[in-house]
Length: 85
Image (cartoon, rainbow, N blue to C red):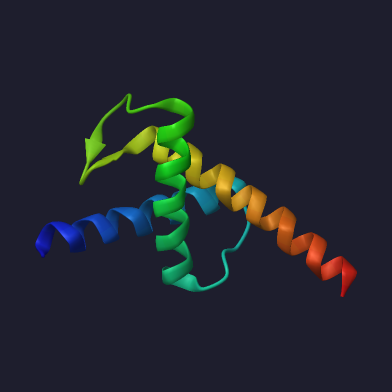
């Protein structure tokens, strides 16, 4: 149970760092950051592998880069939806 909580905290931090790099605000606050961190870790692992330090099952650098990519794409989608509305 503790490792699950640590993984969630690491995912939140990764999501926050990814959104800070891109400069977009994530919808959903902490929950949105957690989702961005988890999806970012998945994207980063798929694109970059598992190089660099690892914490709670996350390869930190690929996860942060993946989270930044995800937040950027999410920002483009939301910006496009706002223009249409």
